[in-house]
Length: 232
Ligand SMILES: [Zn+2]
Ligand SMILES: [Zn+2]
Image 1 (tube, rainbow, N blue to C red):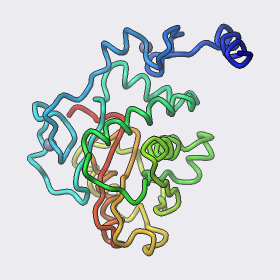
Image 2 (image 1 turned 90 degrees about the horizontal axis):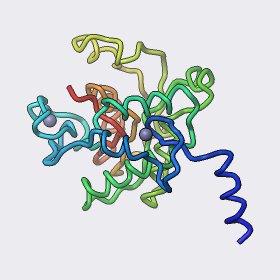
Image 3 (image 1 turned 90 degrees about the vertical axis):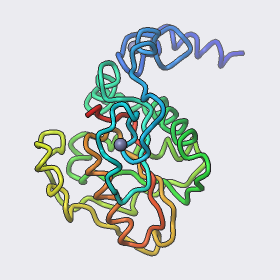
């Protein structure tokens, strides 16, 4: 087949790279052998409230506006590198592999939930412009595609700029986000079961604040999925 020939030809010059470490990867796989062995998967059993393995959970089943949170990986080592490349080095093509990993995690953790649509944690427009893309929207769209669900990118928006949650001490993270997100059209949320996606979650506060706004706007239930969770 010509197309087969062309794709072999192209891959000789533009080889696939591992989505985590970025090294050229000649396997027909998005992850190299080293990263496949070293990416820290979240161990079972999983705490449904914070998404961490129960060994790494210190949430004490704290009540949240979302029903559950799941992630395939901890935000450590090669996964951390992969997320940084995805966020800051325009590695947008890695979204396909990452969103598939998230979709598989959703299937595994929420087998009986039927979702009405997929929503992403929104970025502020100026930040999207500065970066050139909205990595969370791209991931969320991918997750929706892999799960055969509808993606709604305009249901919730970020109204003003905040310091990154990552840069704040734990005690400051809770208040930092109050009133930052707004639901644009409550009628699109009312009575719906939503899947809310983000790339990384550190404390769960961003997901919780978005979930709060969706819940107050009338959403029935919100489940969250991220690519990677901070260990503690
Ligand atoms: Zn690798
Ligand atoms: Zn927990």
